[in-house]
Image (cartoon, rainbow, N blue to C red; front, side, top):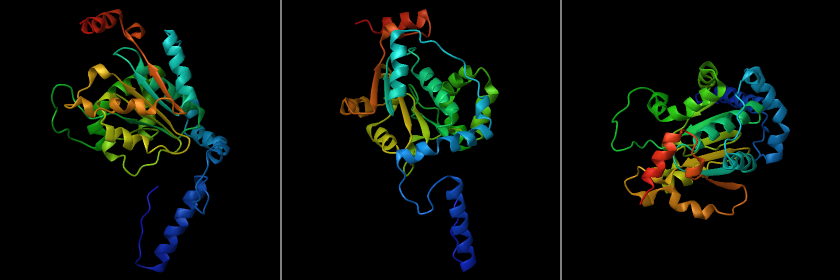
Length: 270
């Protein structure tokens, strides 16, 4: 919603207020701008679902998956039960895949308006330098792993491309989160081992009503120059907090390929 404040004439101010009121009404918000509770959002569930169906969300095709380990089944349950979920584990344990899958499953219900994807813009072993293009074009290369998983889950690239064009799937870098409130959205924060303590605090304090946050991280692949600045250092603070879940994968849970599992074990040798 774009609001332009003009003070040239009384008429322009009145028009702005009228448009603002109508926008609030269409969005199901109270005209008085009062703080809405979680129950208020739940009562609007059917309205939001109908709006999503008008955009074709009921046609979203998602492949059904079967957990390949006891830990994956536990992870799905944890993701469903908690508002914030931290997934730890080595490469190949399907952390990003599960985040993408659950995001699309929740999105299809109509209970959430969009999926916001973010990932620290940290390169491995150097820097790519300046990336030309729009904001999405600059951030896009970092989001390829998540988008690839979503396309695999949908079985059709066109569906994901359409959701991106309609801003149902949206990129948001950590550097631009200040001032946002995450209402009615699913937020996927990938590769968070490269996220600083300040960036994680910024992201988590954006959480509003009816919001799911999924964080993935692999402590063995931190690319920060000072690894003590990684948000992983702060993770013990969130233990035993209601609504926050921890999922810890091990080498046994690697499902990418037998070779990937073997290589990870090799690197773990003393």
